[in-house]
Amino acid sequence: MSNVRKTIRDLAGYVPGEQPQQGKLIKLNTNENPYPASETVVSAIETAVRNLVRYPDPVATGFRLTAAPILGVDPDWILCGNGSDDILTILTRTFVDAGNTIRLPYPSYTLYRTLAAIQGATAEEVAFNDDWTLPTAFRTGDGQLRLVLLPNPNSPTGTVVSREEILEIADSLPCPLIVDEAYADFADFNCIDLVQENEKIIVTRTLSKSYGLAGLRFGFAVAQPQVITQLLKVKDSYNCDSLSLAAATAAIRDTTWLAENVAKIRVTRSRLQEQLAQLGYDVIPSHANFVWCTHPEQPAEEIYEYLKANGILVRYMKYPKWQDGLRISVGSDEQMDACLSLLEKR
Ligand SMILES: *Cc1c(COP(=O)(O)O)cnc(C)c1O
Image 1 (cartoon, rainbow, N blue to C red):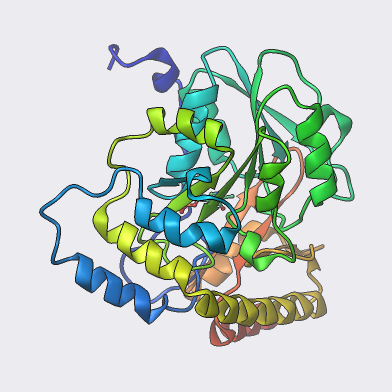
Image 2 (image 1 turned 180 degrees about the vertical axis):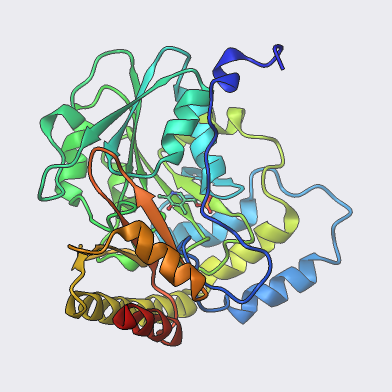
């Protein structure tokens, strides 16, 4: 349709991982948690469902009051969103004009490219060094550079950039640095407290992975209050509904559930990595709830097709300037056994 903005007509659109709604596939392709969420989340939704007549709290006061002491910040340092993808949209709309540039590492989360394109901005990809640190080119830039996005741990590699390096990058950049911590609960450290050191550091989080609530759609940003004030102007008034607010508040409060869940997944992750290596795969040690692997002889796409034909869905990803490979989510031990025994038979 010719009335559509040229930027949008020219856009291919982001393609998320397959989400089959039927069938009995073992789903290891979009890094969902294999375990059900805390029971307290279910009860919170059951209570909230009886009270849907009124609009939800537009600024998520209950969630922010509960989350603040757990995260170690004040409530006015938190902004809530309909998944962290909503938070990322708010951030690009706040900071990026048409013609500007956003920067992301390579290989990384490809949604960022789509967000840049919707704004009519250019996405500049800077390749990681061989040791998964970032080159100097990642931390310099002119007035056109408006946002730098860094998933930490990164997807699809599962690698991390150190806190020291993140502070240094933020100090030398002319624009905000978004540290996308979708997977930080599975890592040994996070960067939430660094937000206090530099107003350019903005951390984003999601309940989709470590809290087992991908279907709920809830994420949040942590930033200095003068930044949050600006972001609040851009978000939809009621971007989080009453059910997700009630559920997210219960989820973040249940720190025991989170610790147990993360511990289980980290044990399974080690085992998956070891066994893939034993089967001859090249594996990058992961700090997230997925593992990136390639096989020196077998093409990744064929392994993906073979697993799918046998009822297991993993993510086949192609990075033209790097390599193609498989990103396998860490599932339950039974799911990993099923996957590994198929790979062994190949
Ligand atoms: C999964 C993921 C998100 C999106 O999380 P939602 O809250 O489900 O929108 C954001 N960033 C990265 C790097 C992810 O892998």
